[in-house]
Amino acid sequence: MTEKKIRVLVAKPGLDGHDRGAKVVARALRDAGMEVIYTGLRQTPEMIAEAALQEDVDVVGLSILSGAHMALTPRVMELLKSNGQGHVKVFLGGIIPDEDMESLKAMGVAGVFGPGASTEDIIRDVETAVKA
Amino acid sequence: MSHYKINTMTYSQAVLNGDRLALTRLLTQVENDSPEGRAALTELFQHTGKAHIIGVTGSPGTGKSSLVNQLALHYRKSQNKRVAVIAVDPSSPFTGGAVLGDRVRMRDLSGDSGVFIRSMATRGSLGGLAQSTANMTQVFDAAGFEVIIIETVGAGQSEVDVAKLAHTTLVVEAPGLGDDIQAIKAGILEIADILVINKADRAGVENTERALKSMLDLAHPTEHVFQHHGQSMRTVAPVQGSSSAPMWIPPIQKTVATEGRGISELGESIARHVAHLTHSGDWSLREKNRLEVELDALIRETLVNQFMEDVSQQQYDDAVQRIIQREISPYEAMKSLMKGMLK
Image (cartoon, rainbow over all chains, first blue to last red; front, side):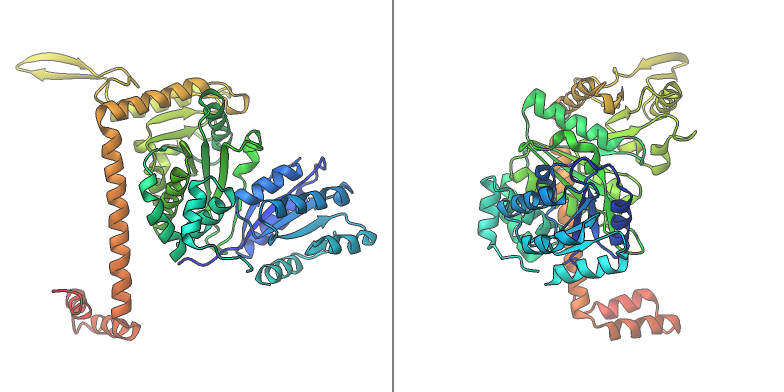
């Protein structure tokens, strides 16, 4: 049997067009031995959940710099759950204000990576979350 | 990982009933060659053999993913056929990871339950890639997807083997990627059933077409002039791409995938190829070859695994040492290591 790879969906929901961060993270996760499916820009929560299902991912990373995270995140998590993918770990990256952290954790978000996060932290947290 | 285990009977039944969660889970099991995967493949095998498998292969930058996007749309809209796409991209040989970005070009297919796109990494396999891809194709086939498009970069032997899985192989080129035809360098031109020049609105398309035509002429000359009893005789080969001809000569199709141009003509070309395969008996011959290759690979793998179980690493290393010391020949070493297995 071949070794299991961690499969991660890196998604850009909403209308935010800044994808440099998402691509940096995608490459870092690749360099840590993971298989990263990148969705491209302007994804709806429905498109993200559909991709997560078809690719049978372990993790979904949402890159949001537009401030729309409080609207987009619950919608994505709801869809994942209704598709039978409630076990998938959801991480957020981008511009997320501190005051929203509590609510996001309460929603079940596994981690939030702001602009200062290192790729080492991201890799370690993703690996830990998947093994849990 | 907190996956709940579904027993294999339920997996296969669920897949046959159209359960997408079971389908995606089974694809993962099969890709990882797990015992559950193998068991399910055994149950599903009798339901395979219906799908038309189309390979789309070519160097990066030729627009394969955009082409696959349009081709899938074509089959959905004009024939209401269910389409599965397996998009294969290379894994890093150093880290074992991969960035799989082919879905980016396929956003037109989202929200359609008659489409299923799955990205696969090559995983640095030594010939295992073709088997994994074949297995995943079987799952999609059993699940009722009538068209299965396998997209690969087509570089290297294992990817050429993947291209050979298909009934119809499209090799995609684009103008202006360099003076040479990339497909020739990759050695995949000879497996092409249809040659596609994508990005055909770019400068240099005539050169690309001319170069492809001369490669085809070398492989399939349209005219033969030869001496027969002192007289010059001339024969002309059948028309390119004709479905009734005994021999199939790959036609050249021009497309601009991002604009959807040339796609229905490409669809017609593919249909002609299918008709040719059926009339000429080639379809069954290819099926037979493919299944033989699969059986041989499984037998080989099992024999090697048996060997590795019967013979310890120590015994093996000792044999190698004796060869290095010139005490025994490799042939004698083999006979000694395998005396338990050979009659």
